[in-house]
Image 1 (cartoon, rainbow, N blue to C red):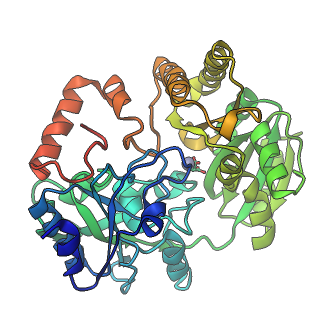
Image 2 (image 1 turned 90 degrees about the horizontal axis):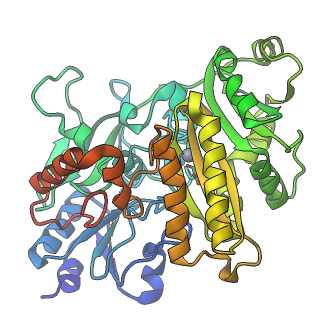
Length: 454
Ligand code: MLT
Ligand code: ZN
């Protein structure tokens, strides 16, 4: 029996093969990365996931786990002939116990956050894509987001998990003892493994007390170096939850996209700060940063109104064309210089190719993280870079980032998109060790082949 036939025999699982039905599973969010043809399996229980993986192992067919498909590095785009295992049907949320809850891999971050909020808690992971991004995807990619400063990355939120190994066996560490010093930490190994070692079916998620009062501040600085220079003072703000930034041009782009004029000038650089503190304390910002142009959001609507100038950047970028997306990090002392060098290098490559490019820069200031999005100018055919130019633009950015002591991926991961660069940052010996780890978990190489390591 072919793998499609075997999958159709599995209880609690639907199988999609029709080109129209599978199309959305084969392409990433930006439209740059496309894969397939592939079959899509949609199991609804963990045993059904195990049966799918077993059937694929028996047929020697690659398996690509996929959550909300909001990744940005082609980590869930299937190679031809693979089976995409969509986990969104595993959407049950259990009871809170020991401060953590077991959630099915397909539970969205928005659903987890409203479950937590109803109990006076927060999941502590704030992604702009939270309505679609899932806890399984967040675990598999060690997702970051806006509140890493307070709550850490997904790794810090994960107390346990259950996963299906490449041969279909189940690893169940949903409720490990809080203190458990018994050998290698297999849960931690799976966090950030990008679906290359096992298929995560459930995540035990640590919840935290929800901030009682939130205040959002938007601050307009004259330039990025000015904004970076203010970071030590901004870190002194009471109850700091998030410290984000956007280049003024990026804010202006969002303002045009949402058709809502920005409340502050956009000729420099904006910083967004979210505080777990009432306005009276937040007004300390005026003492910390006298003469600063500031907009303040207190009520939920006002806060959302300010945040959208940062949170809707990706959407505004995607509406303008197919971007080359990079997600780099540079230590703060070299942050502004690295960015100037990146923009210079990108403009040189674009000028050499006589191709218009529009850099859109924004990210997570507290961690020195910048999302370098490069859009083809309005005159570019199909609003898309030719692939050869896209590769040169990526190289221009990543060379500068490495030269400034930074990381080629601060939060989006390696996927297929950055694999060729992994060794440049981590070195041959570490990548060789990663390959041996991959081979130990997945000797047949059937789980998300081509992602992270080849
Ligand atoms: C963000 O911080 O908004 C996300 O990482 C999405 C993106 O980089 O496009
Ligand atoms: Zn981000």
